[in-house]
Length: 85
Image (tube, rainbow, N blue to C red; front, side, top):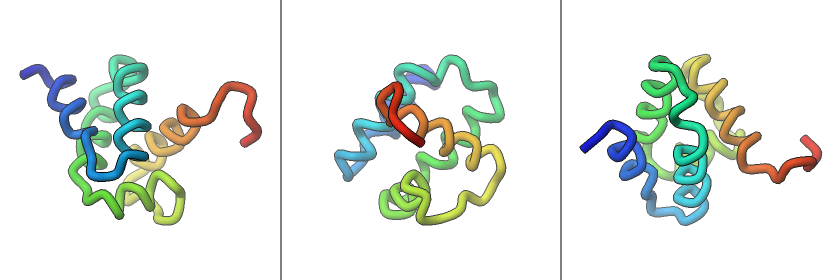
């Protein structure tokens, strides 16, 4: 199994909201992430759903700057183009 396939598998969550967002993000953005960002994404995907959801929604602060940057990128990705920040 390739690393990207493994990451896609980890995106399959118990929460549909996370499934859709993370799977779309990985499909469109994963190849553009550097090794450090890919490692940070793997760490995020190893978290429990409630914690990951809180991070994605900005209700909890990420433990590393790489994760802070990734979460910001994920949040930007979920907004339709032209939507207010």
